[in-house]
Length: 230
Image (cartoon, rainbow, N blue to C red; front, side, top):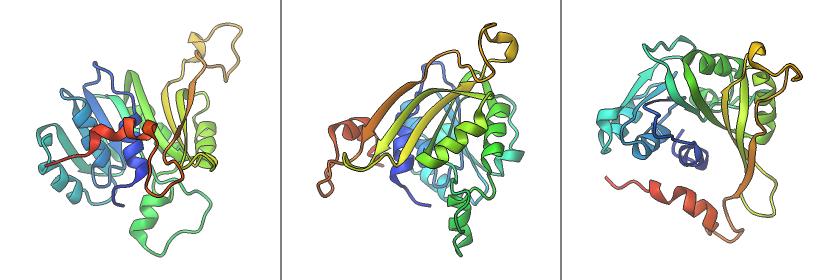
């Protein structure tokens, strides 16, 4: 899959903190989000992992100013091993669950949750995320609700932005940020199993005004730093 709005949105929206030094892009594809993170965090090392060939991602990194801080591995994330956990994990994952698959095997792998079911993605994040780390993901709104159900009690939602393509259309995507959920021993005595330590921050972003190729000021502000020239 080539560069698309979903990847640009996630790469620009994911919170990058000054202390984040190790970052992971799950399902990196062309390396777009990994390169955006490297641009935003000058001292961080970024790894991209994908079940498919990462040759194009490596070519893109080599042509960028950040090639020394970005690396890629062709490996199912279920089998990916690392000597140190990551401060930030991001993913623009395959998301179609019940829909018909495409005859193009590459497109199916990129868009359908065949090789990376939501439960496997959750488990990989829990295994690879450092204490205090964060996980950011973008999903269609219906699949976002499924993912939230899969993560209940394991990953806690702390921030969400629903994305509309134009003001008159319903939200099509959800950008979500998670932290590791508190263990039962850490929860207050009056807190239920699904209790979260904090209420998530919720917002909305409209990409276009409804006029042809006219973006909203909010979308332009979010993405203006990522028109790469090299």
